[in-house]
Length: 279
DNA sequence: ACTTAGACTCGGCTTG
DNA sequence: TCACGCCGAGTCTAAG
Image (cartoon, rainbow, N blue to C red):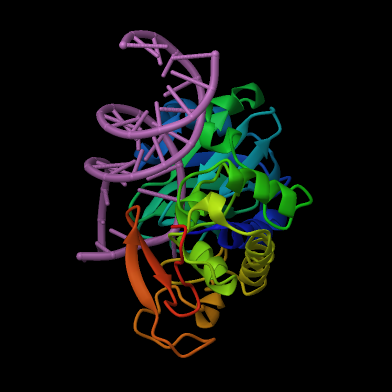
């Protein structure tokens, strides 16, 4: 469910509450979200460790422990990370609870349990291929127009699946891809290597814009998303096309269309985002 | 022509 | 129905 702006909000919202605190116990309720090591090992290895930092890379959350190990959390579609006082009620879908030394707790909850937890050493990072092969982050100095252009020219797929591929740009998901394409007025089925220089510049700017606004608005609470303190974001009120099938385009009043592209619901304005000649 | 690596697509995971 | 995501298996394609 969460894309980069949502994960960023979760991390910045709770990091100051948990950094430099000791995990006194790990309570495992639904152990199938733990991919490595075994649930028993996971609990034992985290017990009495101090959380040194909480960071984000792409849609991954990286918790560094004082023994050098990394607890890598990916929320996938419905995962949540919630920080609460020890005496507060827990979410019905709680899977793993990290009890901290100061009578607080960090809860990993996940309705569909598609999310993943991996406790690894730093030299095992390459085993998590999705994390290891991430492309440049929007808003970073690495994410230049030249970088985007080079990636685009190497790809024969359509622009929408290109942007969803985390190896190209890290952190975009189904909502922000549709939004970035709407703002840059590019049809989602255009071939990645067919974009003009002008379109690449507009797309680059639009990606940075939607990610920046998404972060600033506290994320998009389309369905389930809540930040680390259980609060909704507000960016869903500002969407141009996502989940707006049959509603008027904010630029031209044409009705928004929905198609399925590579298995993903895809929204666009058929007037602003035309599919011309070189499909 | 055959092999191989990489790019790409799609089903599956799971619950409400 | 559909869903804010990814992996692995299978298919396709370009290079050598």
